[in-house]
Image 1 (cartoon, rainbow, N blue to C red):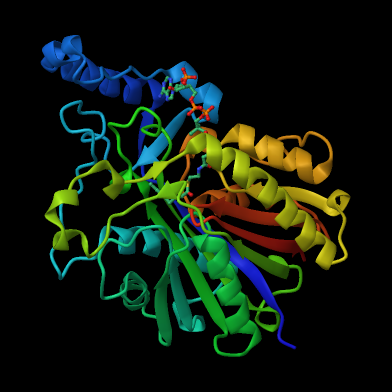
Image 2 (image 1 turned 90 degrees about the vertical axis):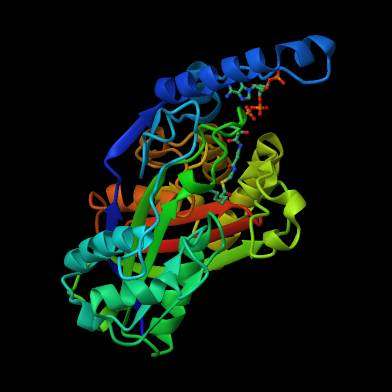
Length: 373
Ligand code: CO8
């Protein structure tokens, strides 16, 4: 049987950053203006006054300190509170394609391979910049890859679900090597006017090279021991933006056409599901929690990750066992667990076992157990 390994990873980090204080300052200026413009209606009880945000709350509730973004100027402008990303002409690369190419080239370099060694490109992320042609086919062309490509979206779990598709393709012989790339521009669909969620997301792009073991050097990369995917429908994380919006003008521009969530419910419902999924997955591979050297968890909320790690291990996890990148990146949707893997994998020794685990909208959970070769 053909075995698949992760032979390289890549990461594109946008240079611009917005820290909590900058974000809160812009939001609170917007709140002040809104409340003074609606002062009379607020006084009459017809309009609810907006409440200010705070950096202390953000860091305590989520662990997030700053985020990288494609455009900072529009996000910190209180009159706009949305990124400014000019449209590109049809003959120019899309923003997601540019991010993807940078991350893929890094993954190829780490794997010691050329684009001609790859047969399949998956763009797996929460939002596509356009409906068609597929972003993945544009990335495939930009890299000069023969073969095939497709886009897929399972929100925060896109990359781990993409990893399973890559693994299947390598194992069944339909591709020698696959690039799974996640260009997440979360700032594009985050409501920066919503106090409950304006701080949650950042932008980044990851790439993972999955290829046949026989094409890699001995000791290179990580063997994929198995994948486990779980979905369970929930409206608690939702975005109603879609191609039918124009068929009912009354909904255009409403807050539900951006990211909305019941954060507390998500926290309560998803955490135990994730711990159970990892535990069940380990058991099916005849592994015990104490066999785990590292957990590269989805990076949405620090408290949530600590709770999940505690449930899986039966004790608190150290930062070495469950690395954190959300303090610097915030939630980058499907890229989060892969950024953690990319930045915190090279110190592992041969035989060390770890789990990459994503979770989010859907609900969706993806668990990928890997072992350092
Ligand atoms: N500043 C100050 N106070 C605030 C703020 C703020 N910004 N926001 C809320 N508060 C107040 C609330 O009003 C509330 O006040 P009170 O107690 O008086 O009612 C109090 O703080 C507590 O509010 P919450 O209960 O909402 O606070 P939590 O402790 O639950 O923290 C979090 C909120 C951080 C959102 C937390 O619930 C959380 O992280 N939950 C998990 C969410 C999660 O993991 N979601 C995954 C979503 S990502 C995903 O799936 C990908 C989707 C597709 C990608 C989308 C890209 C855009």
